[in-house]
Structure formats: structure tokens, C-alpha cells
Length: 182
Image 1 (cartoon, helix red, strand yellow):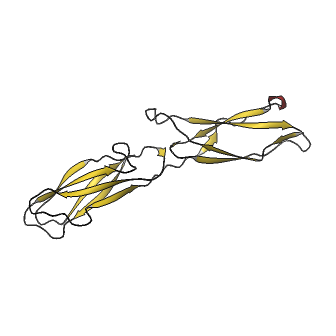
Image 2: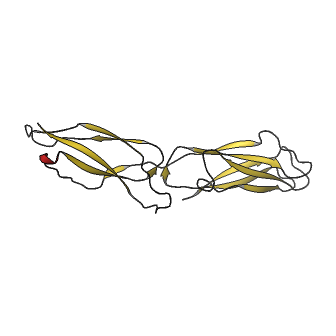
């Protein structure tokens, strides 16, 4: 679901008349409209009011990514109204998606003559950052079976899909594990 960030604009003292300021957004690593919905707004301070809140929708994009930022800039819009310091603030959007992996199937079978097996890891979210996945492999064959496999494997991957795909799209990462006969 989409969330909102509330930003409070403060006036040093109440005015006896209503006045306005303009607030504009500037992308840094967050990009409007993919990460937030705000470009420019005129904010009115009613007479006698020193604080006004503005709400900025933040898009929950279901993509695992680094935290992102954008700036807000306040400029004067009325004669005799001066903007003080700071007139620019940075907004941080903290990413909240956690990528989990599971195997596509409960069981895979391989013969010694195959030499390797391809497994499919299914990711819960798309990721714009590299993820290291460690597979712990246990050999459940009886002692002396003559089968040997690697004991641990680290897989580095990006879990990506076309941004215009359905959000329910499942990404499968294929891992090939060598099987050796001793």
C-alpha cells in the first residue's frame, strides 16, 4: 500500500493576512512518479497560522532496492514574505522489502551420470541490488555411497523483471550444482 510522508512548514511569526509559498521537489535517487508523487504545490498559510502540513504520497513499489532520497525546496510566493533557512530539506525513503528465497519444488532427483543438477530458487521480490544467497547442502546418502557434493555454495544474483510486468511475477534463478562420483 502507498504511504504518506508529512512535512511541516513553519513560519517564524503569524501574519495578519493569508500568504503562500511554493514547495517544489527535486529528484536525487528517488524518482517522481515511481517513488513518490509530488512535483510542486502552492501552500497557503491562513492569517494567524504558523504551521502548515503537506502530505506527500510515497509509492510502495514492491522492489528490493537501496534507500532513496529527494529534496524539497521552499520559495516565496507573496510580496513581503521571505523564506528563511533552511529553505531546502532532504526526504529519505527507506526501503522495506525483504527478499526471501525458496526452492521451486520440494524434491529434485539426479543420477550420477547426469554430472550436475539445475535447481530453481524462487524470489519473493524483485531486487535492484545484488543479493548473495548461500545454499547449505547436506549429503543425506549413506556413508560409503560414493556420492560427493559441494558443502556450501554462494550465489550472487540480481532478481529483476520488466517494470511493466504484473506484480505477482515470480523470478526463478537457476543454480547448477556438480555431482561427482568418487
